[in-house]
Image (cartoon, rainbow, N blue to C red):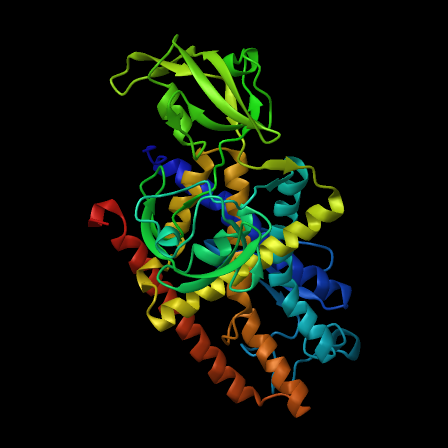
Length: 461
């Protein structure tokens, strides 16, 4: 288990996550508002008392405020919580009034409000697209190599060699398509379509629920099919590979090491590590033909738990768990969009499961948990940290689009009602809705903060 980062690192990482995301969100509102000629009176990162700021030539006050858990753009004409004109005389000239928010057409106001969440969504798309473009796309054959202990799939009648082609009717082309249908659905029975000896079979599989933990000790309940897809295929060679020297090639499927059958790539280290320097016969299938190679197992060293060095056996091969396909810029953007929508889909699933009782409300997290995860991901390196930023960005987009008065989604709901009614709701009704929505949001923030606190080790979490 990896030690958690110190408090200063956690705080720094949290601010490095939240600050830019709030800035990007509010810039979305600001830039679209400016595009439509709306004057911004203030642009704040954080709430409360101003710490520092300046006023630009357009009269916008740019400021940093004390509470760094959000931000806002105050447009001219935002004179009450409902973003509606004040009943009092505003004292503006016709020219000045033309640059206020509330006089703009409905579609422009809606786009200004939508721009914040949309910008957070686009940031997630951009990050995921950049990862796809830089790293390529993993394609892994969804063929069953082996089963885990107490496998749900095996209990349902699945067999080694079956190829999963669909889950609940959704096409499966690669192992990477499976988690979104499984991870969040522990206890649910799904229809898994497999190909077996040229036949198509539909198997009802009740997904198992298993508690897993990461290197920092964070635990979560995830759905598991209990299937091992790590086919024992040579995907490449490492260093001065004894396997390559013996004549093995990329694409060889290892079926036996000595007298031991091999079903999964994960079986191989257990058969090789205990025998450094010894010769072993490795049987492979190549073009449908069995071939046997005598391989002298190489030696490597690893640190033992007691701090000493331990000699282990290696044959210098990489797993054949799929292959990486290069991705062009257009496909990368498409993957970024589809993966972003898939993440939002899991959020909808999570909320639905909380309301139905299938998932505990204790899994909800707030600012303390985000700060904790920020520090942990920061300690793992820039790629893990930037991926976490993408996840939080799309979370902000999703939360802000909820139709709760006081959030962007609440304003959009008001505009939808105005479009249907052909006139806005009266100011008093909007103000009461806003107050109720803000109270709901504050209550939720209090609840998740308490959730965060009780999950900390100091409180026995």
